[in-house]
Image 1: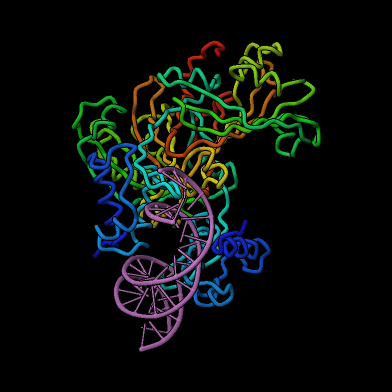
Image 2 (image 1 turned 90 degrees about the vertical axis):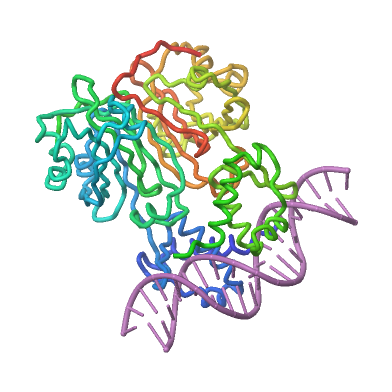
Length: 245
Length: 245
DNA sequence: GAGTGGTCTAGACCACACG
DNA sequence: GTGTGGTCTAGACCACTCA
C-alpha cells in the first residue's frame, strides 16, 4: 500500500517541526520552495499544510507566510463554582478579557427559556473574548435580563470579571447549572477572533448561572478554541470553593 | 465582497438538503453532473462536498456515490452515576455495543497513574463500539487491572453492560471521577469505525470509575462522534440515581 | 468493464501584507 | 510593486464498487 503524497509531505513537515528543524514561531519556506523540495504540485503541498494548520501545528497568514505554531493545552475545570479568572490563575496562566460588543435585544426562545423570561423580553447580549497569557481561547456570548441588571453594558466594561459585575448587583455567590457541550467547526468570524484555522473544531459550551436560590441570572454560549483547551469535570469531589474574582 | 465559488456551491447544496430536494439517504448527482450544474471545476465541487461531509450533512463513499446524511443529535448526560445504557434509554434511544478487541498489556503510565497501579502492571485493554439506534456513536477503550478482574475478557463479552460485568465481581455501585474532555480530528481508523468523515472532529472523554470507597476500578478513553453527540453536565442537581443496568 | 470518488500536476488569476 | 497565500479550471491517472 502506497501512502498518498500529501500525507507523506504532512508527516515529513510534522517530523521537522517535532525535531525543531523548524523552530516554534519560525516561518516555513514558501509554497513554491516546498513544491520543489518535495517534487510535488502546489495542490499537494497546500493540502499537507492545511492538515497541519487544522491540527494547530502551523498557522497560515495570507500575504505573510506560514509559521510554526505550537499552542499550549489549557485544562479548564468545570464545576458548580467555575470562575474564568480563578480557573486560569490556578494553573499559573494569566487570564484576560476583551469587550467586543454589547447590545440590547429581544430574548430569543432558547435564552428566554433558560432565564425564565417571557419570550421577547429585553436582554443584554454581550460578546467578550477570553485570553490566556494573551492568547485568545474563548468567545463568550452571554445574556442577562435588562430588568435585573440595568446598565450592565457599562458595569461589565468596568468590572474585571463577571463575578465582580454580579457583586455590584448584590449577588455575592452563584452556581453553574445545565452545562452542555458539543463540538463543531469554527465559522470564519470565530476562527479569526480565536486566531485559529477556519476548519479547526471548536467546543461550544452553554450554561446557565443561577443564584443560591436556584433562580437563573445569566445564560451564556461560549465558543472555545478546540485544541488549545480541554475540559475537566469533577462531579465527585467538588471542593465547594467560596466565591472568587 | 464576492463570495468564493465553492462556498456558494456548498450553501446551495445545503439549502437543497434542508429543503428536502435531496431527501435523507438519497444519492447526490455525480461530481461531473454537479460541475455542469454549477458551471464549476471539479475542484470547487469537491471542496463544497468536503465541507458538507465534515459537517455531517453528506456521506461520501468511494466508488459508490455521495449521499445525504442527517444524523440525529444525542444528548449524553454525564454525572457521578453515568451509565451508557440507561443514559440512552432515558432518551428513547436503543443502546447497543459491539466487542472489537481485547488484550492484556503492561499498563502505560497514564493508565497506571489513573488506576493507582505500579507502572507495567498487567491490565485488560478492551475496545468496544457503542451504538445508538444501531448507529455508531462511540469507541470506548477501557483498562482494568487483571488482578482485580480476572477473566474480564470473557465476562465482558457475555455481560450486556459494564455495570453488569462489575456486578459479577461484587461491585454493585460505582461513581465517575476525573472526567476530562477535548476535541480533535478523527484518525482514519476511528473515522471508519464511527462511520464519519476523516476530517470530522471527535470528542475524547477520559474518566476513572471508582468504587464507593474511592478506590479506582477502571479507566477509559472514549472517542465520541463529534456532531452526533452533545454532552450535558449537571454539577448542581445530580439526582443521585441508584445503580442501574 | 463501466462508473464512482480520490489524488495529482500544471498553470492562471485574485486577495492580502508590506515596503 | 513584489511576494505571499487563496482560489479556480483543466486534464490526467488511480482506487474502489458493483453488475
